[in-house]
Amino acid sequence: MRKSVSVILLAGAISFGAAGQETHSVGTAEKFDNQKVVRISPRSIADVNLLEQISGDRWTCGAGGPNGEADYRVRISDLPLLNQAGVPYRVIIDDVQSLIDGEQAELFNPFQDRGFFDAYQDYAAVSAYVDNLVATYPGWVTRISLGNSIQGRPIFGFRATSPVPPIGGSPRKPVVFFNSLQHAREWIGVMSNLYVATQLLSTYSTNAAAREMLDTYEFVFVPISNPDGYNLTWTGQRLWRKNARVISGTVRGVDLNRNWSVGWGLSSGSSGSSTSETYRGSAPFSEPETQVLRDYAISVPKLVASIDFHSYSQLVLRPWTYQYTLPPGKVAFDRIGSAMVNAIASSTGTQYTYGGPDILYLASGTAPDWFFGTTGSVALTIELRDTGQYGFVLPASYIVPTGQDAWAAATTMITSLCRADLNRDNFVDDSDFVLFAAAYDAFLTNAADFTGDAITDDYDFVIFADAYDHFTCP
Image 1 (cartoon, rainbow, N blue to C red):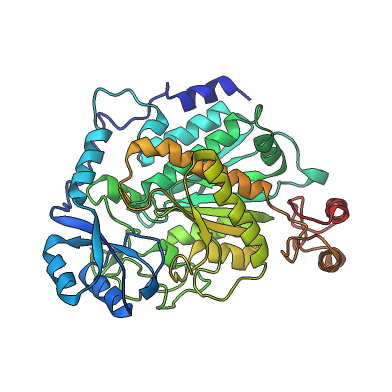
Image 2 (cartoon, helix red, strand yellow; image 1 turned 120 degrees about the vertical axis):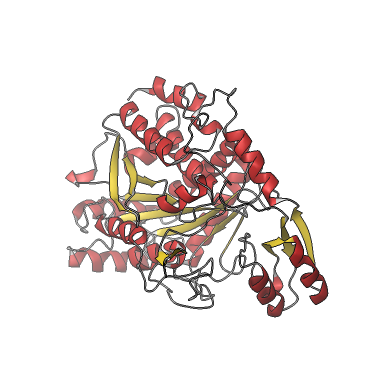
């Protein structure tokens, strides 16, 4: 393992900056002059419906419905309609286009020699960075290709783990899955995902938590889940959200994070209209991007945890997102989620909030609901910075601080896992023993697989017995 190169990567001596690359054109095809972002305090669902009709572009991931605030991009010419209807609102971003203009100027400053995390990076630069990680950590990092997008772009990622072998000759260690950029305009998710990966690898020799995580688990990072949409945001459609699905001869797109099968199709958390920003597609997994993410996750012998990175609002969100019904094992989610927001506050001083749809809004057909409902993994969404000052056009100066938020949250999530707590009540007790015994008797099941070989056997019994002796979770 060559740590000297990893230090160079973090220090910024290797530049992947966008300066001078003519393909990086932001905001040239679509302008947002005379547009603002307003935060409404709806008095009833009628106020929300009015904003959906006027704007159709909801920015916030804050509390939904008539009891919570919500951010929308609107034209100045639409403000009289809000005033006439008496909708309580305040302007939180006065000029959307000026934010984009500032971002473009920052991206193409020819006088800056920037490192990777000093600027946002396009698809090609992210791909090159992954190749650099592979070259920097031979035997630790392996590039993977999950499949292609609807326009044929590879959806790539990488596997990362230490050379410490899996327990009991297992072919793979248990897997942790981190993906980002289902929504194309949420650039900070790409950078935070990669920041977590870089920190994990570069601090292995100095950070006991990183060492334990890489020795115990295999991490899979997919930084750009929506490459076609991401390309659109770099070539003229900066605020594009969906993929590049062509509908009736026009690129209208599908919201990939409404296209997963668990909870799919509910109008309370998605839309059946192709013109909507939350259009769910024609069927669950109608889109190749969600198909390949699903197929890879299913191919993993034992997937234990996942994070879907988004922005913005500074939230850590548990399942379910499509219904207010509490998920099985909510007490375990609460323990882990609360620990994550506390870790962020201790690390960077930034305040995140943990919860479910009660602090967000109903969203049906999302990735974390599928990961939890299908694989049983601890699956969470992180809505990264900020809380509305910049929204999706977060300045590059926030990349590292937001990455530090993500690193604190991710490490806390993984180190807080209590995998022997099979019923997720925060205790490893007799009720878990009964569940383990059933899986152990069945043998050919991964229900209580702790080693990553997709079966429950004697090696798993040893691990469970040790946890059972301790009784409590972390």
